[in-house]
Image (cartoon, rainbow, N blue to C red; front, side):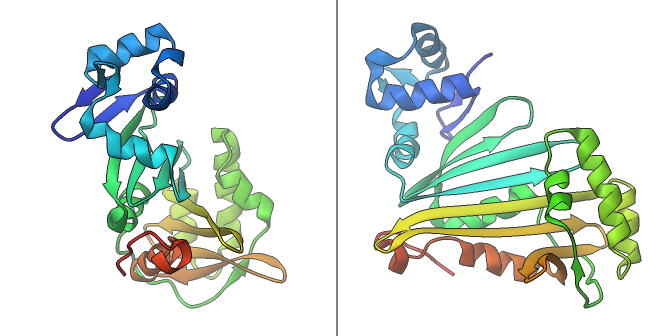
Length: 246
């Protein structure tokens, strides 16, 4: 599989083997498979025994991150998983859905925008206030690796959404997505783990919350989810290093 590097933008498209090789090359070049090095070299991603300068900030984030961000996006037809290493300048490995990834540095302040873009977060109609409890296994089905399981999960979800007929109709038609964003970072008192999840339909957005019974679907808006994404990320007070804008 080819490796494609744009030295102007610093964007690098590659497969998992080449990505692992690149990260290893940044710390111990002699330990990387010659075939992988040759592919990276032909693309211009490495030269003279070092990664290209446009890749060094992103690689520094991978090798010395202050935390991690993972964004899973599931639809009836696909599941993609985007990974980010959070640092002063962060690194983002975007799943292109075809077995390849795009790797690039990104300003930490722009991470909420990156999350919004990859999840398709945008304005939707407002659903009527209510709440529906669902089983954890239903959410697992919506994000399963098997397309058949995801479709079956969508059918079960539509049946659960009696308070919102328009959303149920959209889900039955396969017009839905599930987004799950997970953040983890160490602090002086231990590792902090946060999760934000929502279901997106053309009829409205439902945030996945929790009570004593388990997951609960509650109507929300794109604006509220944007704020929740911002709040998900570590602050400079929590890490002692990272800048953060609201």
